[in-house]
Image (cartoon, rainbow, N blue to C red):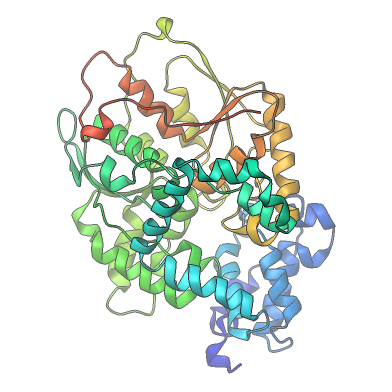
Amino acid sequence: MADSDSHLKSLDYSVLQQCMHCGMCLPTCPTYDATRLERNSPRGRIALMRAIADGELEATRTFAEEMYFCLGCLACMTACPADVNYAELFEHARAEAEKSGELKSVKRRLIRGVTLEWLFMDLRRLRGLGRLMRLYQQSGLQTLIRRSGVLRLLPKRMRELEAMTPTIEKAFSGRLISPLTPPRGQKRYRVAVLTGCAQDLVFSSVNRDTVTVLSRNGCEVVTPAQQGCCGSLHAHNGEWEYAQTLARRQIDQFPPGEYDAIISNAAGCGSHLKHFSKLLADDPDYCEASKEWDSKLKDVHEWLVEIGFESPKVNGSAMETQHVTYHEACHLCHGQQIFKAPRTVLKGIPNLELTELAESTWCCGSAGIYNLIQPEMATDLLHRKVGHIRKTGADVVATGNPGCLLQIINGLENEPRSYRVVHPVTLLAEAYRREKTDVVSEGAETLQPASVGHEVAQ
């Protein structure tokens, strides 16, 4: 591989030099905690990256596998006293692994081609697949097949993947939300809401609730029905060029100068979306716009606290107390360094009792598609998370990322008691709907306040 094709050799060397090898990251790294192997730690991985940049090591299969064994949870960044930008190193290292071709196989090429290069490059295709899945689920065919026992004929991994299939929402965001939602009361801000990929298919109600909450707090909300993928999945999996293409499309669709804020309600997407200026630094046509984009991109909790959201005006004494615990999505707390804002939102809801979760910032094992490519480690992390949830005594688990929501829903499915797993914004939106005054209409399908959390029970 020529030096010009090497992501690590072309990277600003000061980023690689910044690691002091102090070891402060070691206790925070889930893979190192599990194996106690230096190469499975952040500083071990950085040493491998630096050796490649120095020309002392080739990007071997072992290197590539190591980069995909890393969760990318970024807990090491929170712990690091030297402020090493591991997120940037991680993405370039995976891109290096892909450029090397060391992991190539017919099966892997087919899967990545169908998903990253075809399905997620045009969300009309993804929604088409979503409609087929919805028909399969709502027609009763999925239930029939599961009860028939035919799935036992499949290999174990295929059975596990089938069990993880998410429930597709009854309607996608474009049917639930008007392209332009006026503010309730005086207009204070004009914002755009990004509806996402998996979020749109599986948690479109969270997008609806996000618009409800923003409108209730004086925001005029722009939510185009047809949106594209933000590219986080591509950037996190070494497909740098596709990520750049999708970033340009986002900026074209949402010119940052037209909004006071561009809102993301998915932690993994938000962490990526805030760094378009790094992604497009060498693009003269988008360099300046990407810097403005980064400054306007806000996580929904962050924005609500920044503008001073109103606590719902409801009769707390007439409400049943909700016992809630909060799992911190890795790319919200470690990637975006947002710890306090979601708790502030939750504590602003009447009759909500928040119980802190032990190891709340420890990864649940979802990590994008990590639970698909590293099922054993992901399962171990999920069991660890579920154990801590169980000990809180809470009935509701709140978290701000679709991957975490799905992972925890699956993890709690066989628990002897029932849990609700939900986005914090949904809890706030439901409290606003309980107010005696009228709520802003978002279209015919949103007039009836549906239960938008996901309940799991044995």
